[in-house]
Length: 133
Image (cartoon, rainbow, N blue to C red; front, side):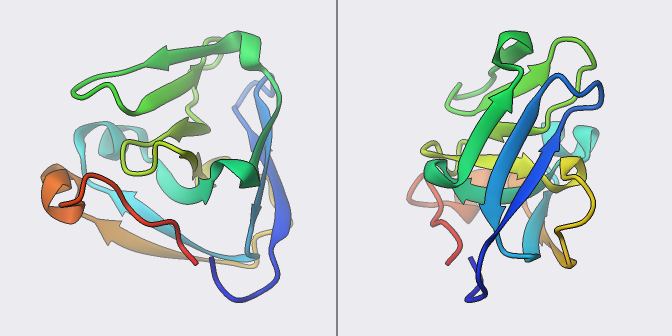
């Protein structure tokens, strides 16, 4: 994370049943991955450690999808189909929040950085990533 003081952001799925809270800077840096699932879904990754994420409601409507190594836990709202967050393969002890699912009002700026997920193993030769400072 950046050196700035973190703020609490809220967000959720389209129908509103899934709601979460995430602690991150007001000026966020997100990744836009070109892998098959991210490019099709438009997920913008805001990666946070597990202790900076809290599911406030909707656990009962989450459906989990796994593929390839089954390390990532892609969680979708079973009602509206939106993946507002998931457990990523790169950070299995954290969450990737879809920045597009954050409520307006707390994000001051968003920097989008491309990520080559088509060649995931080259990007993470040790099998996982570091959390942003």
